[in-house]
Length: 121
Image (cartoon, rainbow, N blue to C red; front, side):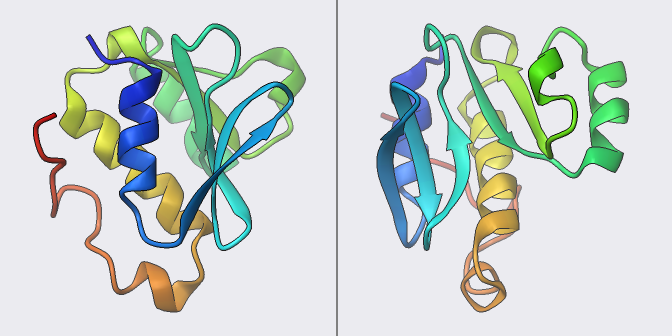
């Protein structure tokens, strides 16, 4: 089963990523812009997601994705680690968020989600 350490390992594998503690839990930034956080008890994580895509995502996979009421006006969505299919899905979700936060020139140098997979470990 995937856990917060898998989120950390994958997030830190992306270029120019640093881990910082905010609000009492780990967050990950690319060139100073946050792209993932592991809130609460470590069973979920939050990533960037354009608001116009969130409703469709949550409707299509409500067991995986949700937005807490206090984050309804943000451009973030949460995902349940236990509901993800595998590490490849986690990788793609984190990479998509990283690419949204990264400067365009950096994002363009790194493969799009689905083009590269994490190594076993």
